[in-house]
Image 1 (cartoon, rainbow, N blue to C red):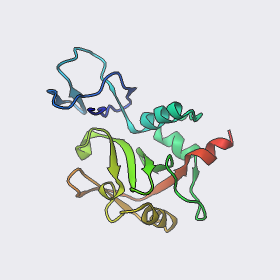
Image 2: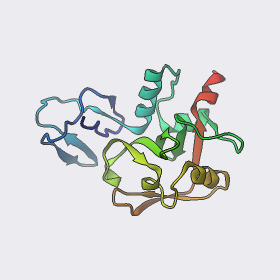
Image 3: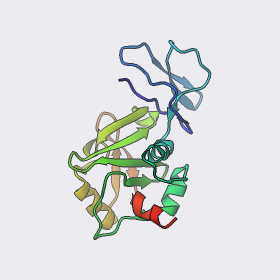
Length: 177
């Protein structure tokens, strides 16, 4: 079906990049984006991580109004020891958010930028996001014990040390609104 490109600050999904279509990664100064020659548009279609979560919540009918990672971190409650991680919960670390998609398959959905060589919205296994974290039980243990994580690149190599991360409860936080 194609993919939705990552666009920093992006919140639109006007079109997806279709499989087999000619597209190329364009780098301009400090910006990167996918160019899709079949469409002659000035507006870059795509999403960043926080707008992905905002749009998914809107589709699901969840009243979420937070548009960036800092506001999500500030206003949503952290998971507690006696509470299970559920689909829709959010993994937060500075500058990025990831949504939990399937507990049994240990997968998440994220829109990760070009520095890690992903540059798209994708469903991805937890073991392919964080080094030595294969399950949500391991992630919860790491969170409750203030452990550090390493973010992995598309090749599976650590590219970024995460000193602090949180697991945020989307639904219970919004009940307070």
